[in-house]
Length: 144
Image (cartoon, rainbow, N blue to C red):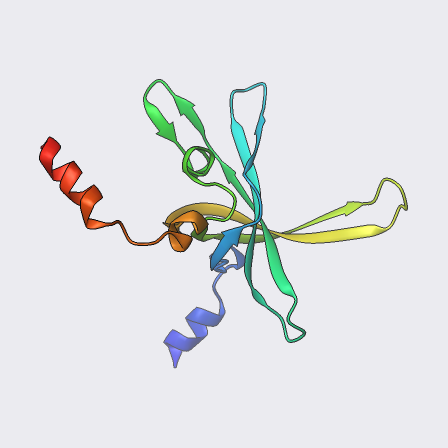
């Protein structure tokens, strides 16, 4: 019984906020570079349909840049290898961003997935392609 009480008394900082989605990108990632050299990539992914059949979208944000020592951060991977229509699996923390609309003054909110890990699954073009024909495979084998 004492173990259960200890779990309930964990500090708030121990709350886990993990989210994983499989989705197809709706556009190419947008790159924003800051004066410090840090780079942020933003994109949106369609990851399912609601009860009315509407596509559900989530905004994704990843940080990272290229350096002399190679890629740093998941953002550099997204910026280099991810494109519109590609299926990816993204894991990270869900964050709700609040702001006031400039035009109407209304309070707005949006969910954003702060990506910390990404796995590239397939591109839409690859999914639509027919299998490689044997002649192409033979030509590749001849070169080696």
